[in-house]
Length: 310
Image (cartoon, rainbow, N blue to C red):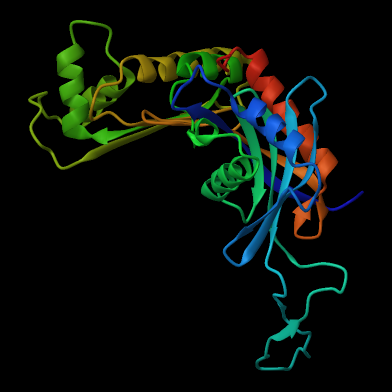
């Protein structure tokens, strides 16, 4: 069995200043039609070269990309082997291979309209965005093609996401003052998970609910207990209900982190839509075919759950 590397696959959305003007996939396809060769698809960015090494159609639509970066002529640092009795060692350098350059980093993308699934090695989101800007500029697509940002998800329906994927863990965090204040403001209604936690802690401390600054913080972590198999389904339903309550009853000062069964993190300000995959190694990176397959699989999962906006 080939060695595998654990990689993170994440979701971004390309948001244009004029949402009705175009989408990222269309602009990429137009740029690739104009820039047909590897030389044309290569850009000089500072002392680095960045290029579209490969592009192809996704099996169910969308566009697959492999972007690579390297620094021409840069030598690699080598840690030499020494005897076990050695007390130190000196690094060595190795020149680039005669038929190419050392890979600095790369990024695999699956782009379907404005939706972008990414897996990168030593390449940040900002570098991917800058490359795409320069790529569109080189293809002379016009200024409107450059007016986009790669955004982390903020507007996906959080309750829909946690219901689709299930809740693995719920962590509620707040100052005791904020928690009890939230409880007091809502006590005429069904109490939120945060307010109920504050009430419970105050009862343990034998203090009245006078929402005075207590200088304490509540940190409540809930997980299902797999040891009680017969009650596991009930526990999963209850933790999902509590997670939905934390989302729906959120007020300024509240804080929570919801971890879904597939590894997505949901917080009040942001949803970190991502997952871990194991893909066959290819030197410093991973094999292109398998990681492209994982990217499309990740997208299909989000789409089938009704989470993505079209």
